[in-house]
Amino acid sequence: MAVYTMLKPLLMSMPPETAHRATLNMLRLRLGPRCHFKHDALKSDMFGLHFPNPLGLAAGFDKDAEALSGLFDMGFGFVETGTVTLHPQEGNPRPRLFRDQKNKSVINCMGFPGRGLDAFAARLAAFRRKKPSVRVGANIGVNKGSEDPIADYKTCFSRLAPWASYITVNVSCPNTQGLPDLQMRDDLNRLLTEMDEVHGKTPLLLKVSPDLTHEQREDVVEVVRQQRVEGVLVSNTSHTRPDAVPEKLKEQRGGLSGQLLKDLSTQAIMDYYDMTGGDLKIVGVGGIASVDDAWEKICAGASLVQVYTGLVYQGPRLVRDILAGLVEKLEAEGLSHISDAVGLAHKKDRASKGAVA
Image 1: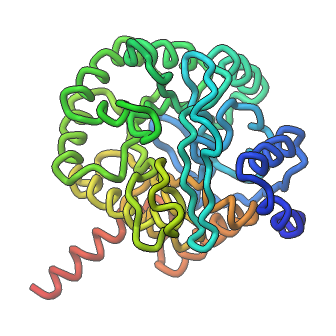
Image 2: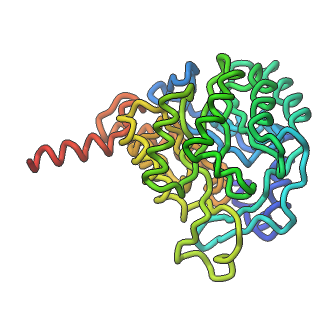
Image 3: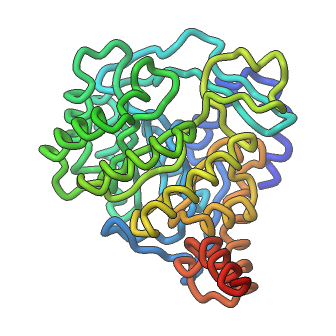
């Protein structure tokens, strides 16, 4: 962990993508840190899967599934790879990744760069043959200018289903033109209806935008209840630009992540939990940089949580700090298991309103 403290100034002096590539190379060679924190109170079962702890790595960090062993060394309960597209593509022109160090946030307009499905599937299959019990998610998207996005999703799902623990259908990335439209009720219903043809036994999750209106979120819930969707990831990055964003970045297109996304994603989690009465499994992501942030997401209704941008600024020690801190939070609340904390904020709110009444 101390190694990152020494390396952080060097990494932050590099262009963001250069630093990211250097980090991936170290993890690919398993030169990164190792965390072996385990606790029975953090074990979870959902989507028909067992998770050793509720903390995962969000998609976007390991787009091509090349550093999985090194990432699991860090102590994650699950890792989501991708976003992968059917065909290789360069993504958007550089520069396309921008740090806001003051606010511990990032704006990215990457555009799904990657080596494509064939290379991704080969690496994922090789890893899962060696480690079949670990939980690896695959986040799937579509190529820029795809003539048949739904066919692309179906092909990616079918190819990855034998190897992925679950597959996330990404319909909310703000950096691929037209993609967020697939969250709208009729388009989403058509997409999921066709996905049912290839769904099989592999859990299908849906990644949604934090920028949807309340009515649009209700539409998502209505469609999800009619279709075979095991859970939702809340949320993707945002196209909003809070006042705190530096002036030089306010006009930069792309998705906002990190601390400036935290409250927006947490409110979205609250909404989806309320709308479904807690029946829909939620993976909370967006602005988690401490155990307090992770706890807030869980109490809002998330059964699992993911980090990414927080890891960039806090370093790998964040994983152990969150896991150990969650156990302390449970003990302080008098709870025996992490599942008891899911939606706790709603329960406390109802209790306080009942007491007032």
